[in-house]
Length: 309
Image (cartoon, rainbow, N blue to C red; front, side):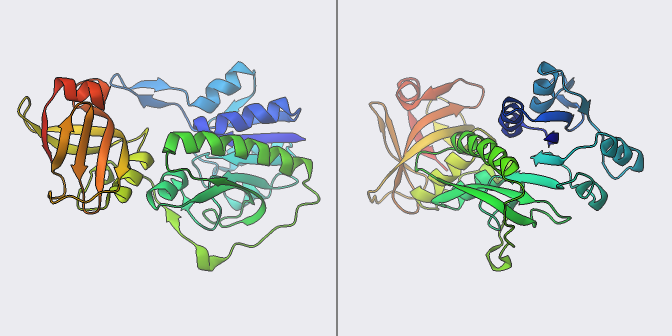
């Protein structure tokens, strides 16, 4: 098939590469314009653009597809279908109706649960046990189109946003190839509006740990915020003043304690147990502001942690 591809972040890269490997003709790649990044604010290409350049594909980076000239350019590519994976723009109706088979979106949740920008993180944060990917026939709404195909994936207690991202990216690539191979046999399923939830974009303000929550809830937060923006807490010690402690990984300890939420129960011999509003949390990988990321054994060898709050 003649495929237009629209995507921007790393999640989209594997899908693009799979479509190429499967033998589809990629007639154009749409991605977000280059943005300034890093301390030097240097203009940088997104992961999808880098991949498209490696495969000598035609690249389009409009600020918006609402412009009539941009719409005419897209139509001139004469695509059978447009595959959209975390592109970052809502497509106007005229674009949705331009390709023969319209626009197909790969969404990283089992819709209508977790419509929106951060479905992977929100699923972990909410304690969901299962998620998946959906191949959706796009309409003008936000993730509201009919579902053409789904693939499910269990969320393990050890999954972080990164590990779940990787599993769903693979499922998404498999799903879109299957959908394109069977495009004329797929039966659209209307989403059940009674099950709608929204996955709002993560904010750094949400990364602060509230130790009054249960150990399970805090651990979900730590996993959901890894690799970004990383859960964090204020840390007090006899060796450093009040500084931010970032928590990359932890483990739930199902025991009770008479310590107040946020107090260290035990911090010696390569372990650090912290009281919560329900159970205890064993910190495993942490980083003190301005320092290296350390496993808890190395961290406790260098620092005597007294209290977290």
